[in-house]
Amino acid sequence: MTRPRTSTHTTHTAPGPSGPNNPDGPAGPSGPDAPGQAAGGYVEALLAALAADPHRPAVTTAEGRVVTAADLHDQVHRLAAELAERGVRRGATVTLLTGNTVEALAARYAANLAGARVVSLYEGMSSSTMARIMAGTDCSLLLADGQRHDTAWDLQQIPGAPQLLCLGPDGAAEDVLAAAAQRPAHPFDGPAGPDDDWCIRHTGGTTGIPKGIRTTHAAYRQVLDQPLTGAGDPPRYLACTSLAHLAGIFTDLTLHQGGTVVLHHGFDPADVLATIARERITHTWLLPPLLYRLLDHPDLPRTDLSSLRRITYGGTAASPARLRQAAHALGPVLYGYYGQAETQHITQTLPGDQERTGRGGHLTVGRALPGVEIAVRDADGATLPAGEPGEVQVRSPYVMTGYWKRPELTAEVLRDGWVHTGDVGYLDEDGYLYVVDRIKEMIVVVGGHVYPAEVEELLLSHPDVAQCVVFGARDADRAEHVHAAVVPAPGRRPTLGELQEFVTTRRGRLYAPHALHLLPAIPLTAAGKPDRNQLRTRLPAA
Image (cartoon, rainbow, N blue to C red; front, side):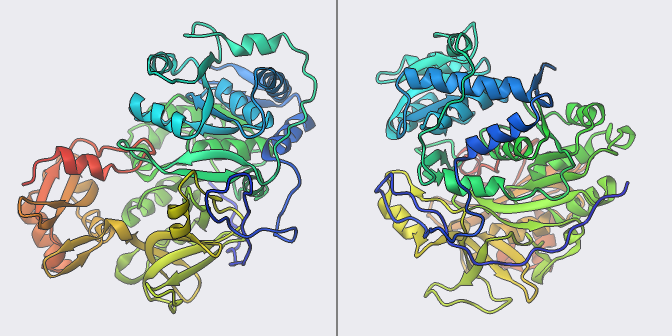
């Protein structure tokens, strides 16, 4: 298979957007000269792209139904008018309890077009957490599709729950799509301004109340205006992970660039491979653990993947050995993204960058995307030279406005337009970034500090280890120790002593795991990342 290659991006300095519609903390700088500044909201840009080619297949549902660009365009306008008549307006909050459905896309676009901000409730959250998120974000309306009706019904039993409307029949409340379908598909003039929030994204987590991250229409519009290198012309994107997370952003990018989105309700490696071949998929997004499952599936060698131009991966640390295996098996289609909900995308790795490692074997997360500026600074704020590790700080037009109703936390994380990511990393002489770990995930052990990612990368090079997560856990005396949760390679069963010797020989006794937990799978948060909190609370101490 032959694949197009692109030149390496250079780093640029750019201001970020502002958000005067909520006085809960400082915002990133903005102005008329911000690079890539576009008029109008992101929904208007998507609708214009749909209207430009009305007959193209825009979405293929998981059940095989094809929705044209014209059908989706008209449904959004009808639903926006219906929601506006029911009181949804600029500054309101609409919560989405939806799966990977075309109705979920139409609801998000319509709510934003009507002027509301949207909040997505993630699968894996408890009903009480969902209820507190809705209350905390001043939600006035809950929209649920056919994938989440049972949960919606449970939420309605909680005192103070907002009004519920269903996106389709057979629900626990009125079908708002049926009501909207009676309307003419007249254009709807959206009232939202570029500095209004289009969404509040909540960080991953299964306990407590995650932080609400505010992103403006202007910032997101600029994300959509960035070309998606190598995704196909036109792109055919397979959304096999939750639309409430990054799959939703890639869906918007695909529709904005004239492509087609194929929806799956969830990730199954056999179905993904079959769909790539049948639908001639050019692009998909996978977390590294899902990419590994694809690589390990017996159908891979006999599946026609000639249409595939890009697999975007990211969200968690990746194994250099496994990425090299993927590059060998799939060809030059791997594009890595590094970012956070607070910053959106920061860096990208291109095909071939999987061979680029830094000091200690760290895999690069790539170079800055256009408009993004990266600085690595010490605790006193001094910018560090190439090769020196410190906190990764980011400034770009895409950064958050701040945390919803958390001015103190906003002021701590967003200072003078720079997002303090909490990631420890360093830049090399060529501008490639290497992330060591999260500052807050540092394990303080007798004799020094251990960053879990360092031990994880080392353990993933052991032949008996397929997947692993390293975390800190305290004993009865409150002393912290290094724990390793390991999914063994097929037919293997590593022992604690073997892995301790392996790590001690290569990195030192300080880094050797104190306890080993063999698991059939790594538990994940609602955002699809390794759930260290669950590992700490559920696994035995020894």
